[in-house]
Image 1 (cartoon, rainbow, N blue to C red):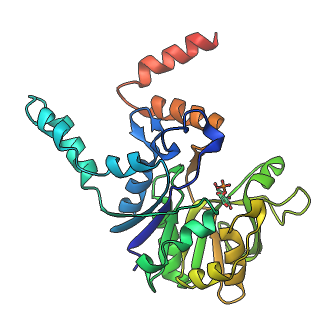
Image 2 (cartoon, rainbow, N blue to C red):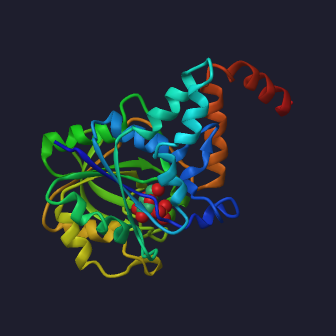
Length: 286
Ligand code: G1P
C-alpha cells in the first residue's frame, strides 16, 4: 500500500523570472488555483494520505496556502453564500501535509534524499510540484496500480520531440506491452544522438525506499547537481524499474509557453468561462 508522497518544490524557478523572484513557481495560478493544489489533489485522489513537501527559501506561501486562514474564514463565514468559506476550509484540511526545507539547491536527487527519514522503509510516490497532469485516472494512481502488480519502482514517461530530448531524463528498455517498458538505461538530459529513445520522465514516480541508499551513493551529475536519474541508474543494478506511458496530458508549469497553453486549455474547460472565452479567442485570432 502506497500512502506517502513526496512533492519536491524547492527549485528556484529561474525559467519563470521575474514572476518567481518573490513567489514560488508552485503558487502560479491556473486561473484561480495554484499549481501545487492540483498536485496535492492528484496525490489525494490516488489514495495518498501523507504528503511531504520539500520546501526551500522563498516558499512560505506554499505552507500558508495549505494552512487554515482564520481571519479570512471568519469574514467569509458571515457572508450569505457559504461556498467560499467551505472552499477555503477544505484547502486547509486537504491532507496530512508535512514540510522539510532543502537549504541549498543541490538538485532533484538531493531534494528527494531529504525525505529519507519521513518515508522510512516504505515505497512512496514522487510528484514534481511544477507539473500537473490532466487525466481521467490520476497518473499517480495509474503508477500505483503497476506497482501493486510488480512490487518494483515505476515511473511515468511520455514521448517528446527529438529536438527536446536534451531537456529531460530519457529512458530505454524492453516493451512488456504497448504502454509498459522494463527499463535498462536512463540518461539525464542527454545530448542529441546520445538518447536511447524519445521517452522522457514525465514528473511522476513510485520508488522503493532503496532509492535513498542509491541517492547517498550518487555524485553530482548534470549541472553539477545530484540527479534522481543517476540514483535510479544505481537502483537499476539492484532492482527492476518499469516505465509506464500513462494516460493523460502533462503540463510543465515551469515553462512559460506551457503555462500559457495550460491556462487557455483549462479556461476552455471551465463551464462558467467556456462560451465567452471561446468567442473571445476566435475573435482575437481573426
Ligand atoms: C526533472 C528531471 C527530468 C525529468 C523532468 C520532467 O528535470 O530531472 O529527468 O524529465 O524533471 O519535467 P527538470 O525539469 O527539473 O530540469
